[in-house]
Image (cartoon, rainbow, N blue to C red; front, side, top):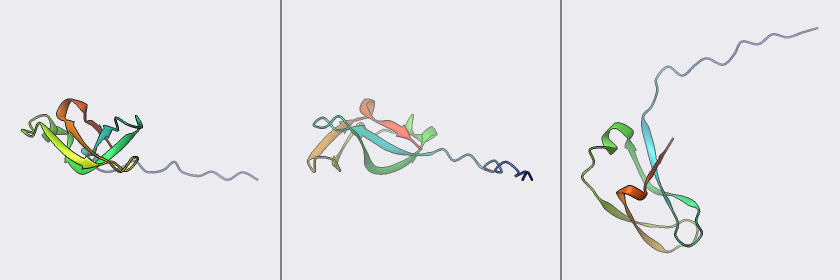
Length: 72
């Protein structure tokens, strides 16, 4: 006896909201900055840097815009 299942339905809307990730200079692991942003708006963002408390080493790090990765 075989069961046939329908494939999962595709997402109706593609979200372009992304988390900001930065690599920890101590552990070299990616960590979330704690902010989310629309990917299209990131290109026009005027902020050049920021600070965050790292989840891996518990230290406060600074980041610059070129170091940020956008993740889903």
